[in-house]
Length: 339
Ligand code: PHE
Image (tube, rainbow, N blue to C red):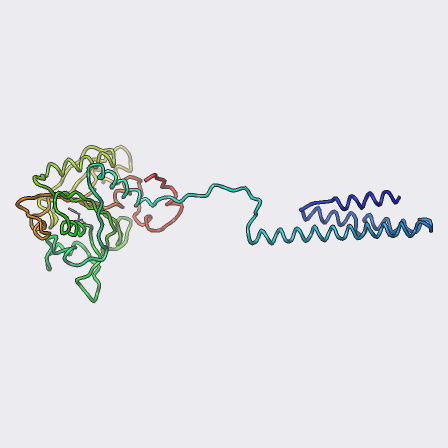
């Protein structure tokens, strides 16, 4: 009998678990109202008197061991739960960290930069808060010129000379003021127009401006550059130039690419024509060159400007411009890119 109890004491000492159910089962097995100790104490009265002392001590030892075991296991469990609260589960295997993705506007901007870098264009930037001279006057848009109305400008109320730039053409003025031809630069950036927000228009959007000034630059150079760009960017090699008007270029044109009419979406986005307008362009007006201290009798050049959102919407078939600015991760995480 005594041997059985000392065996039980060893069993208690060796018992280990971190599961709350197993601790409770252990407690019930030894200390419960129908447990081992209850039986042993009941047995006590049958023990011969001379053995009672030793028997009693051993049962008490077993009882104490079982109680201590339950307490230490419970304490260990509680402190493990507390640690988890502070540090998380320290035993959890490490997982790969989720990588963020670049914004589609940045991806398209970087692609445009990359395409023009290859033919020698550098990147230049200018301020978003502009003055009247760089955004309008130097670009052949003097005060009271009707074409200013096209631009829906945000003015700084107290100082009408200060405004949020309405196009990145302001950067070409700044660049020409500071650099001598030959000039080959593109200027990506954010622009602002006081327009109602809809699926197709936003009051904040992005443009890329291109400028090339040298001796003997002709309209043929412009056409060739645009053709190169549309091939690289969209894989489409049919473009057309429609005569248009911009105060800072003469002649001016709008560039359409032939998108095709293969799918229903093609029909919808090209309004059944197969053609899509992607940018404005033209030969820099001699007046603009003069305003920027470049001799128009010696130099000529071309300029073009396009909306990045528009190009991104075409490339990725995005139906609503507002999706770019909502920061919905379900939208953003679809764009993975190495550039
Ligand atoms: N600045 C014009 C716009 O915002 C685009 C453009 C740039 C047109 C350069 C011609 C030349 O619409």
